Amino acid sequence: MSHPSVPQLLEAVRLFLKEAEAALPARLGFHARVAGNVLGIVGRELAADPDAAEAAALASHGGVTAVCTGLRSGSLSPEDPALLAAITEGAIARLEVDNPRYPTLARLKEFRETK
Image (cartoon, rainbow, N blue to C red; front, side, top):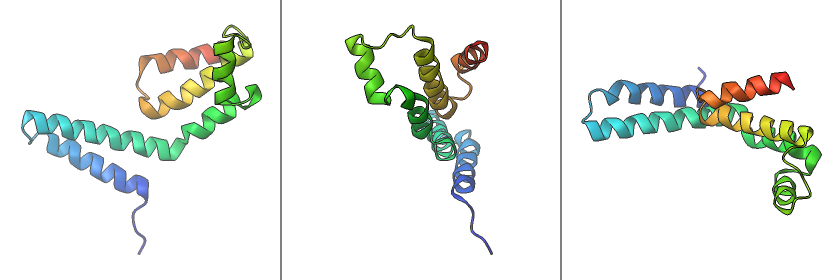
């Protein structure tokens, strides 16, 4: 007999919290909802690895640190289409984990498609 996977365990606890939240007093119900949202983020993070996606997107520009340094110093332009596309890919990877229903995520994906 196989044991449940980590994503299955996270989902089971998230569903339990969602069910329990209605039966809890307001403050505890709110905290149950927050905890359930955290479990959703953890599950998506484990599945997607946004750090690796962001690093891959920015690798052609020297990585995250080099991009930040270059933008601060002015040696990189935020108007450079290739850099903007790389930053957009990194942002999409993060938003897909943090809040896949965030309205800006859909706009970023549309922006990516037009480039």
